[in-house]
Amino acid sequence: MPAKADTQLLYVLRNDLALNGAKFGCGLAQCGACTVLLDGRAVRSSVTEIGSIGDAEITTIEGLGTVDKSHPLQQAFIDEQAAQCGYCINGMIMTAKDLLDQNPHPTAAEVREALAQNLCRCGTHGRIIRAVLRAAQNTGKT
Amino acid sequence: MIGVAVNLTRRHFGKAAGVLVLTFALAARLAGAQAPKLPGSLANNRMLDAWLRINADGSAMILTGKVELGQGISTALKQIAAEELDLPLTRVRMISGDTAQTPDEGYTSGSQSIEYGGTAIRLACAEARALLIDQAAKRFGLPAEGLKVSEGVVAAPDGRKLGYGELAAELDLDREVTATVAPKPPALHTIVGRSVLRRDIPPKVTGGAAYVQDIRLPGMAHGRVVRPPRYDARLDNLDEAPIRAMPGVVTVVRDGSFLGVVAEREEQAIKAREALIGAAKWTGGSELPDPRRRGSTSS
Image (cartoon, rainbow over all chains, first blue to last red; front, side, top):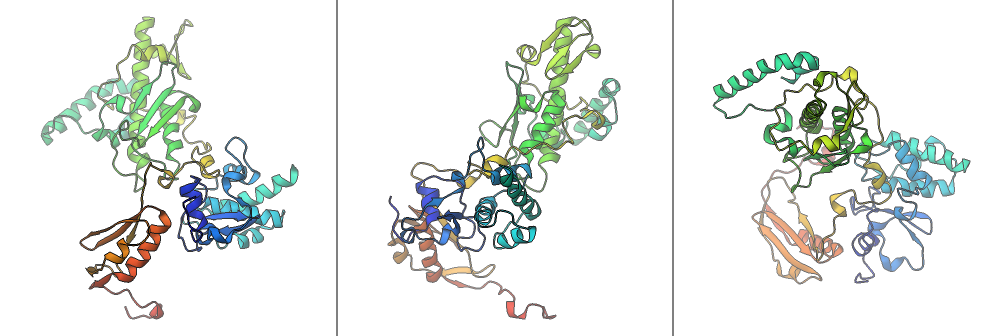
């Protein structure tokens, strides 16, 4: 890997590994578009240096599921049509994944709280919250 | 003109069409133009085959110069095409924004894609459908009025059927759109006006390629732009040498007060940009209001 230890994880994921899921939004950990999971917990990959990761397992949205075999969260976002431009959705889904792993049946208020630091400029928040609640419901059934 | 057309039935429209064409021609002559102005994006892309192709299997390929930005137009424009062509949505495909193939519709902006691009696709597809029906009428030796179209198949009252694929092989769509064929009246719509799932969302929730940022070219470098600290500020002074010496920096780009940097890797471009911000000296420009005075009544 040509990247140095102080390189932020996001650039390695996008540019060296050609993964599209995590997005560059602000580069300052303020918007959440770059969110990935490190050992299951949501982190902002644009401010996470690769030298600090150690043996932690990195999960990107590509690792959740595919168009043909989608994760319940991805399917819920499709079912609710919870995207306009869609640029923030990676962060919404990855942050929601962390939430549902910790709290499989959150209330709408808890979903709101968990996603409060993820920005959507289009204004899709209402659908996003419904999608997370739907995923929680569907996960419980399987 | 379209407003007029929509209020006419297809049968009546045939009679009125001559009058409309004459009006167009007269207006064009008065304006000194060669050809009548066509509605929407047809105005600058007048050929029928700029907008659609009918494939040998009877499916359609729609061409659009408008691009998907999350407004859902890659779905909505297909709905319009499928509606006017009497094809199921699954048999309409679309090429968008490939400048070698698609009509030049300028920018995708201003909530104008349906108004301009949709108008063009609606009229072009209505006209293509009429041409396909006329071709079927010729083959059947029957008047076009008695023929019915369903899912890309034209049927005669006696049970004979011809598919779009076969009919299109005998038709040349390399012709100007006349925009005189009335689109379907909304009361007959079965596809337009109904919600269908947006086709751009699945790749957006699974890390598919969905954005300009997802394009990677061989040997691609990364750039960052330095914005002036104040609106209208001028870049006066800059020692580029230390920035050019930074790891991975390919070049510093300076053109008047435009300032940017190109580097081999994205994180290198970001670091070089930070260094450029420190090194650049700007003069002039209007100061922004002091945020601490926000809420003050003075301006």
